[in-house]
Length: 143
Ligand SMILES: Nc1ncnc2c1ncn2[C@@H]1O[C@H](COP(=O)(O)OP(=O)(O)O)[C@@H](O)[C@H]1O
Ligand SMILES: [Mg+2]
Image 1 (tube, rainbow, N blue to C red):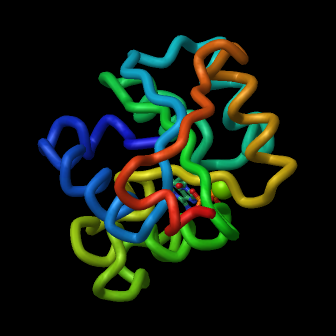
Image 2 (tube, rainbow, N blue to C red):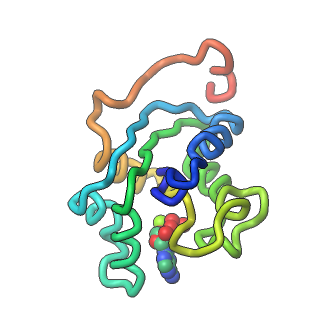
Protein backbone atom coordinates (compact mmCIF):
# COMPACT_ATOMS: atom_id res chain seq x y z
CA UNK A 1 0.00 0.00 0.00
CA UNK A 2 1.10 3.53 -0.77
CA UNK A 3 0.01 5.36 2.38
CA UNK A 4 -1.69 8.79 2.42
CA UNK A 5 1.53 10.65 3.27
CA UNK A 6 3.20 9.36 0.10
CA UNK A 7 0.15 10.15 -2.04
CA UNK A 8 0.13 13.65 -0.54
CA UNK A 9 3.82 14.09 -1.30
CA UNK A 10 3.34 12.97 -4.92
CA UNK A 11 5.62 9.96 -4.43
CA UNK A 12 3.30 7.34 -5.98
CA UNK A 13 5.18 7.21 -9.26
CA UNK A 14 8.55 6.92 -7.55
CA UNK A 15 7.34 4.08 -5.31
CA UNK A 16 5.68 2.14 -8.13
CA UNK A 17 8.79 2.68 -10.27
CA UNK A 18 10.93 0.94 -7.67
CA UNK A 19 8.70 -2.15 -7.51
CA UNK A 20 8.55 -2.32 -11.29
CA UNK A 21 12.28 -1.79 -11.73
CA UNK A 22 12.95 -4.68 -9.33
CA UNK A 23 10.99 -6.97 -11.66
CA UNK A 24 7.76 -7.39 -9.74
CA UNK A 25 4.49 -7.67 -11.63
CA UNK A 26 1.47 -5.53 -10.82
CA UNK A 27 -1.71 -7.62 -10.75
CA UNK A 28 -4.11 -5.39 -8.80
CA UNK A 29 -4.46 -1.70 -7.97
CA UNK A 30 -6.96 0.80 -6.56
CA UNK A 31 -7.09 4.27 -5.00
CA UNK A 32 -9.43 4.93 -2.08
CA UNK A 33 -9.80 6.70 1.23
CA UNK A 34 -9.88 3.65 3.47
CA UNK A 35 -13.03 3.34 5.59
CA UNK A 36 -12.81 2.78 9.34
CA UNK A 37 -14.15 -0.74 8.79
CA UNK A 38 -11.35 -1.64 6.38
CA UNK A 39 -8.71 0.13 8.49
CA UNK A 40 -9.76 -1.84 11.57
CA UNK A 41 -9.49 -5.12 9.65
CA UNK A 42 -6.14 -4.15 8.17
CA UNK A 43 -4.55 -3.17 11.49
CA UNK A 44 -6.39 -5.61 13.80
CA UNK A 45 -3.03 -6.96 15.06
CA UNK A 46 -2.18 -3.52 16.46
CA UNK A 47 -5.49 -2.81 18.25
CA UNK A 48 -4.82 -1.66 21.82
CA UNK A 49 -1.24 -0.52 21.18
CA UNK A 50 -0.37 3.04 22.11
CA UNK A 51 0.14 4.11 18.51
CA UNK A 52 -3.10 2.51 17.26
CA UNK A 53 -5.40 5.58 17.36
CA UNK A 54 -2.82 7.73 15.60
CA UNK A 55 -2.20 5.03 13.03
CA UNK A 56 -5.93 4.68 12.31
CA UNK A 57 -6.36 8.45 11.88
CA UNK A 58 -3.29 8.57 9.64
CA UNK A 59 -4.31 5.71 7.38
CA UNK A 60 -7.80 7.23 6.87
CA UNK A 61 -6.49 10.79 6.44
CA UNK A 62 -6.47 10.78 2.64
CA UNK A 63 -6.37 8.50 -0.38
CA UNK A 64 -4.06 5.51 -0.34
CA UNK A 65 -3.22 3.08 -3.12
CA UNK A 66 -3.74 -0.65 -2.61
CA UNK A 67 -1.68 -2.89 -4.85
CA UNK A 68 -0.94 -6.55 -5.37
CA UNK A 69 2.52 -7.35 -6.69
CA UNK A 70 3.65 -10.79 -7.82
CA UNK A 71 7.11 -12.24 -8.17
CA UNK A 72 9.60 -14.68 -6.71
CA UNK A 73 9.71 -14.09 -2.93
CA UNK A 74 7.58 -10.98 -3.45
CA UNK A 75 6.77 -10.60 0.27
CA UNK A 76 10.40 -10.47 1.37
CA UNK A 77 11.52 -8.46 -1.65
CA UNK A 78 8.89 -5.75 -1.15
CA UNK A 79 9.67 -5.45 2.55
CA UNK A 80 13.34 -5.07 1.67
CA UNK A 81 12.53 -2.35 -0.88
CA UNK A 82 10.35 -0.59 1.73
CA UNK A 83 12.98 -0.68 4.49
CA UNK A 84 12.67 -0.84 8.27
CA UNK A 85 9.44 0.35 9.95
CA UNK A 86 11.16 3.34 11.57
CA UNK A 87 12.13 5.54 8.64
CA UNK A 88 15.08 6.96 10.58
CA UNK A 89 16.54 3.48 10.96
CA UNK A 90 15.71 2.33 7.44
CA UNK A 91 18.72 1.92 5.18
CA UNK A 92 19.35 4.61 2.59
CA UNK A 93 18.30 3.20 -0.76
CA UNK A 94 15.01 1.93 0.64
CA UNK A 95 11.75 3.85 0.19
CA UNK A 96 11.45 4.66 3.90
CA UNK A 97 15.17 5.36 4.24
CA UNK A 98 15.17 7.77 1.33
CA UNK A 99 11.88 9.59 1.91
CA UNK A 100 10.71 9.03 5.50
CA UNK A 101 11.48 10.84 8.72
CA UNK A 102 9.13 9.26 11.26
CA UNK A 103 7.84 5.88 12.38
CA UNK A 104 4.18 6.47 11.68
CA UNK A 105 4.38 8.34 8.38
CA UNK A 106 6.54 5.77 6.67
CA UNK A 107 5.03 5.96 3.20
CA UNK A 108 4.31 2.31 2.47
CA UNK A 109 2.77 -0.83 3.89
CA UNK A 110 3.65 -4.39 2.91
CA UNK A 111 2.35 -7.75 4.05
CA UNK A 112 4.76 -9.63 6.29
CA UNK A 113 4.05 -13.21 5.14
CA UNK A 114 2.18 -15.11 2.45
CA UNK A 115 -0.64 -15.76 4.91
CA UNK A 116 -0.88 -12.09 5.81
CA UNK A 117 -0.83 -11.20 2.13
CA UNK A 118 -3.79 -13.48 1.44
CA UNK A 119 -5.70 -11.95 4.36
CA UNK A 120 -4.88 -8.36 3.40
CA UNK A 121 -5.59 -8.86 -0.31
CA UNK A 122 -9.06 -10.19 0.62
CA UNK A 123 -9.75 -7.02 2.65
CA UNK A 124 -9.21 -4.76 -0.33
CA UNK A 125 -9.85 -6.81 -3.48
CA UNK A 126 -12.55 -9.04 -4.91
CA UNK A 127 -11.18 -12.00 -6.88
CA UNK A 128 -12.29 -10.39 -10.15
CA UNK A 129 -10.15 -7.33 -9.44
CA UNK A 130 -6.87 -9.26 -9.69
CA UNK A 131 -5.46 -9.87 -13.15
CA UNK A 132 -3.72 -12.93 -14.54
CA UNK A 133 -1.69 -11.92 -17.57
CA UNK A 134 1.68 -12.37 -19.21
CA UNK A 135 4.03 -9.48 -19.79
CA UNK A 136 5.13 -9.10 -23.40
CA UNK A 137 8.42 -7.37 -22.55
CA UNK A 138 9.78 -8.84 -19.39
CA UNK A 139 7.75 -11.79 -18.25
CA UNK A 140 11.11 -13.57 -17.89
CA UNK A 141 11.70 -11.51 -14.75
CA UNK A 142 8.82 -13.19 -12.95
CA UNK A 143 8.75 -16.53 -14.86
N1 LIG B 1 5.94 3.08 17.64
C1 LIG B 1 5.15 3.53 16.65
N2 LIG B 1 4.68 4.80 16.66
C2 LIG B 1 3.88 5.28 15.67
N3 LIG B 1 3.49 4.53 14.62
C3 LIG B 1 3.93 3.25 14.54
C4 LIG B 1 4.78 2.67 15.56
N4 LIG B 1 5.06 1.39 15.21
C5 LIG B 1 4.40 1.18 14.05
N5 LIG B 1 3.73 2.27 13.63
C6 LIG B 1 2.90 2.41 12.42
O1 LIG B 1 2.12 1.24 12.31
C7 LIG B 1 2.43 0.55 11.09
C8 LIG B 1 2.34 -0.93 11.32
O2 LIG B 1 3.36 -1.32 12.20
P1 LIG B 1 4.23 -2.63 11.92
O3 LIG B 1 3.34 -3.70 11.41
O4 LIG B 1 4.99 -2.91 13.17
O5 LIG B 1 5.27 -2.14 10.80
P2 LIG B 1 5.41 -2.50 9.25
O6 LIG B 1 4.53 -1.51 8.50
O7 LIG B 1 6.86 -2.28 8.93
O8 LIG B 1 4.99 -3.93 9.05
C9 LIG B 1 3.82 1.07 10.72
O9 LIG B 1 4.11 0.94 9.34
C10 LIG B 1 3.73 2.53 11.15
O10 LIG B 1 3.01 3.32 10.20
MG1 LIG C 1 3.27 -4.87 9.73
